[in-house]
Length: 427
Image (cartoon, rainbow, N blue to C red; front, side):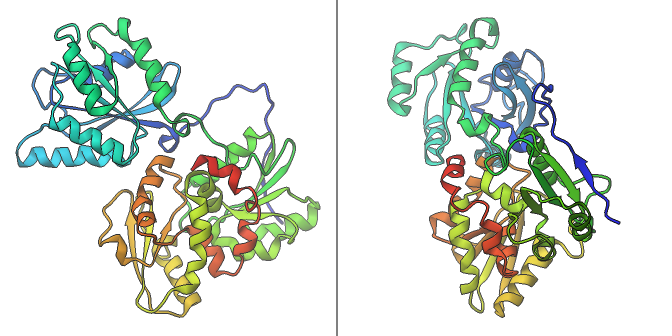
């Protein structure tokens, strides 16, 4: 007999307690020379001593993440970085780690002091512009060394940005204005949580989630994409019915329930396709996330390129999280096996986890396959795909690639085709 977990819709007047993980918090990087007061600024903004402060230049060595709540903005992650003027071989390594955070952040705050703006700052703001990272210039220690008119004009001419005057010693005078500017400068995608399926379902609808419990399932809990979708279903005042793949047939037969939408783990696509009547929309958790965070239009164009792969082609699989690899890992074992069997070609596969470096020039790859990205922000995922897009390398997504090689691609994307213009606003 089937067993189901049913999460009923919650009332509109419920108290919201949004579980906002790091994947949906705005990331703000704090940059500047040594001893300009980067850590002091963080402490002054939040009213707590959460970052180590010292008069010794170079106290902050590696980037340090601080998860905090900013009044009027919500939960954010500050990344306190090493000085951009660090010296020596070790200093160069620290600067390299600081620069690597540019791939993570939604907003940069460049802290200046003592009326200094030179090549360090010019090079860094040039990188902000190249990567399309919005940034703010904060003149700290203004009570000790006020910004001169000449300095203001210099900064304006070099960056086309105005200085924001600040003193970490007197946050009561400056915090309100700085917080206002941070909120205005953060891109909407960084502070507004976009829904996953709100345009596909409505009040009172039933959504079935097919969630296999296999060797890759974490002990005693669901994986993050499943949790995120359940929360989104509740937020849209719908009912979630959660089933193992082998229980779907009996559940539909005994209950007569016809769901508005079915979302399956990609690994159970074939079983779900056989069990769910063709007139009921079916897709996967990975594809739902791809539409919210990834470049869905590029995925739609890139997925059919799987059918054009040739002998000797190299494929890059990007996993946004780092995890223990199981004996039949989806990204390292199953997808390469499925694609090889589908194409009948001798292919080469490289796997990169987290934000690790890609092992070879991106131009060497005939295809890039990105995971759903449940553990990273939209900004991180977009930055990860920038170079493949720049070189016109086809990009697809785990769920879309799996659906394609199993012959159910058209059905898997059908719930979203015709709606991609609306969801494209998130890209």
